[in-house]
Amino acid sequence: MHSAGGTGRALLAAVAIALTVACGGASNAATAHLTGAGSSFDNPLFSKAFFDYTLQHPDVTVNYQPVGSGAGIQQFIKNTVDFGATDVPMGSADITSAGGADALTQIPVTLGVVAIAFNLSGVSTLNLDADTLAGMFLGHINKWNDPKIAALNAGVSLPNKNITIAHRSDGSGTTYILTDYLSKVSDEWKTKAGTSKSVSWPVGIGASGNQAVAQAISSTDGSIGYVELAYAVQTNVHTASLKNANGKFVSSCARRTATRSRAARL
Image (cartoon, rainbow, N blue to C red; front, side):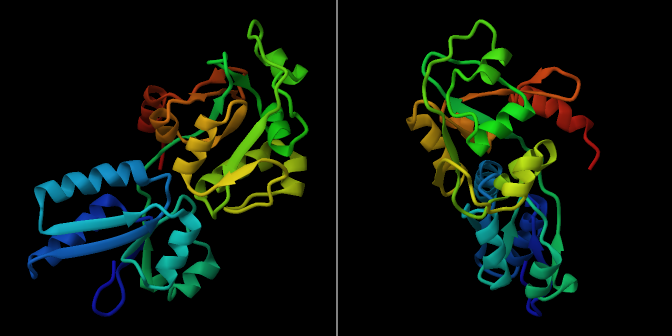
């Protein structure tokens, strides 16, 4: 957050931090307004939290714009918002551009899931492993009835239909999370695209923000992409189960996420 001296700003702004500052400001003025921008991954949480807080404290308003992690960092650096939110912590170059480590605070906020969402007529369950997922995003696997997909989904009738990849077109922490995973499981992906908030996608259609990607998947039969789990739920698209290191297929359901988050070491 901004103070009179320009310090105390927060990136990866925790709701508690934002609201603590809001409370302090509200005691000295009739109204207090906070502005933030960044991660669309975090927006479902922020929308609910800020709305509920304003109901209890109508003299405080929080305006958050889910423009993506990359754009949020840039707005934070340019000092046009009180706080930014990103799924990937700021690197040294961005910290320097924002005034140095003493001028900001980065605070973990929440834990969420990047879900592999898909829309394929007649198919509601889908198993994938790391190699197959990487092959799809690289464009090597471009038909839904490809033998590699079929081998993981015995008994599922997969159509001879083109695969459409839906991905982010903006700088995105969600993209960073997915590409970091793909770089770890696929040497080819690591070499050709790598890990970043914004990559040169080998194939697919781009959309800005989690919501837009989820809508693109929802409206395109034969598509598959990646979104924060809440967006898949909101748009009523199916999510794939991924094979883990133990050979088990793991779904991205909210209950499983909540259970595992309680055991996470942060």
